[in-house]
Length: 255
Length: 290
Image (cartoon, rainbow over all chains, first blue to last red; front, side, top):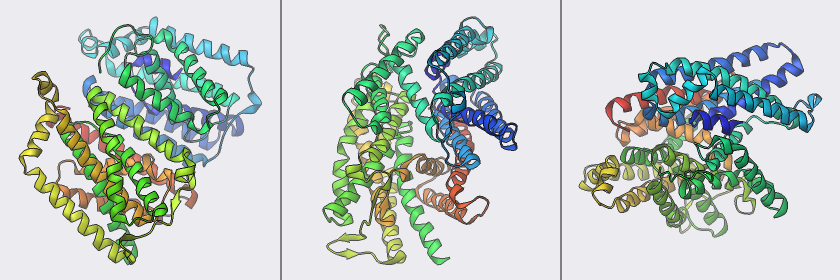
């Protein structure tokens, strides 16, 4: 899901992993303690930072090319900020909501609907189409009157919904720690590069290939499980160096 | 109080040296090179292992570590030739994170999360540094010599060539002029600064673990680089002292419990990076094409 989102928006947003973690902690807080003060406080952090930072970025750096580098730094810092706020509010606890443990078909159908929502948003909704237009060529999009600032805010709203769905699925069958979000987004990024930035339809195949590679390395060859994160990092580096266009793109792409 | 001031000064000088290397690449090439942090991690572990396992003094361990960073120079050079702009940053970030994880996972070499400890303060041939005062004098004289060399370098023709090649690399490539040798020299220079900074960090703390090199350290370096970007080395030093003083002083602010102090400091410094990045890139965008 993260890869698909990154692929559609064509933006390297490292803070998405932290927002995923925050959404998971909010769900957990709500399930455990209901409408607590902490729940409201952290919800405010979620929406205020998401909207404020993205709005400021669009306002202060209106040109796409100039925004790229600052975006990377800002989203990295935002990721650290969100995760440290989670740490401050919840402490170094590991969360899961096993009372809602879902069957595999329930998880798959939720993922299917979330993918469908993402697909519909970008392919058929006006806001989604505008988003693709902006990411393809911002100058032309602005020339025909598409407001990138308005789109950015709508996009934030959509990210929020998506994050809560994915976070719900994640903690219903697995556990999550404060700093886990960052590695989810790195994995998402790796899979996006593996498929090829422009090849959204191959994202699931790329994810399947990556999981198979993990299975081969850590189950069949018995590599230590701790090398799971370095694997995706090596993959990203090798792909950027030798096949930047991704596995499924036929057009040669230079960086 | 006296010990605290000495501690702040020592750590500030070490971070100013580390920031100088990071800033040099940003100034001359226009890109943020995160693999610099990988060099810092590698050099820290290399010099620690050399002093712990082979009983080398700091000086020979530092030079051997520098020689051992040569493969990095080749790797970073290769990456910077193949990738540009945001993709170079992403590639270098991958290298940094890979080495961070490797320092965690190669427990037979790096001692896992527990890290390596009891590194000696021996400089060379059983000459040791005793006390914070001696250490400060040593670090200060080393930093001053390096800063003077960097200021002298800035006045040379070679430095102007480095700027020119970094600014208009594509134009030079189109004209058939090779940029790789100059880029290699720049990377070697930054690796040297990273190795010295890392070596001093190890010798001062007598202890390293992987978490010392995670995003917290990067945030501190970025803050110093962003604020001191337009200043000379002395400016970097003064700003380094200010930033490290704030960072260390937060230990005594009893706003949160001790177990959450790390999160609190990271939160404040992440906010600082966010604000500074906005200002830094905005002014940079107006002054220079990135």
